[in-house]
Image (cartoon, rainbow, N blue to C red; front, top):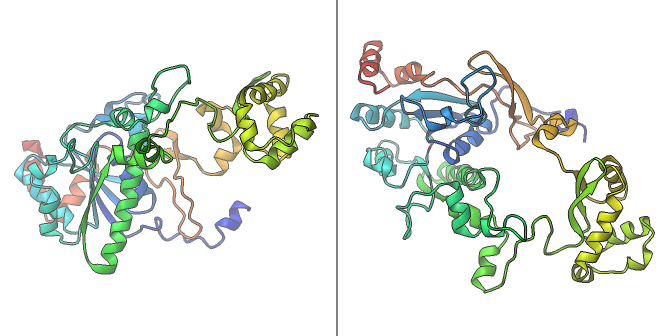
Length: 403
């Protein structure tokens, strides 16, 4: 489909499908901000409440060249507003609750009980906004034997069993190179909040949404927990697959490709193309049993060709294949660019950088990077003015270090 045809009926008067929804985000690091990022990208008004000293992600390298802006922070906190507010002080708590009166969703990812201890937990917020959707992300959840434990992304990856299956078959347990547990926790939080919001809109009932990093990873682990509960063995496959062969990373004359064969019909096409029709009748179980032999066959075919030749040939045959790219190479790829996965954005310093764009595409209510990550407290004055805080009170709050 042509891109212009997909967006032929697009509206340009809305920020996205969640236009008009107000979210208060009290988060730090990655999982909570990721949930807010998704909702902000979808068009919601997301107000990030940040401690006056700024949260940790503002200080995490790498930094945008020539600035002190963290790349991770800029990617994750675009499309949001920002208010600096100390929730440990009674005045900060009262202003937070006043902000929540007009909110639809609150997102937080502190250790269970932390916000309740400050007087801004779910039960506190529901007193001022009975139908609030209050979404909490933590390592192990709001209940259960380990709910009081601190839990971060690599802890979740290793606790759940995920790391035990990742990496080279001859190596040891390996965590993901990205914040996988945090990313999935953030996505499930955004999805859970939207589902709870739909319920609220139908019934008027708010609720507390509980997201655990360990639950998100387990849910997305392709049935491994069920297999483990039944005593079915799992093993580390590296770049291969238990359910298909041959599949692997294969060396070419100018790099590597990832390709393989899943369907019997694809195997028949490939074996006839390479002049090995005597192998064409091997069914999937047969190919899995002869995995090493067939893996070596495909490796031998690739090693004398360029990555471009392998990609072109396999695509012509209707088989899945890709060059193994770095992120730098992916960033230059015309398909990635056509999908708007990099969007030129002016940061608060005036520097322009290509920020990662939203993943979901909406034909009627398009989404985009509308604004850069705000400076710490950039919207404090205007947001507090909306709840009746005067200029004189703002000066006093600043003097106390509350904002």
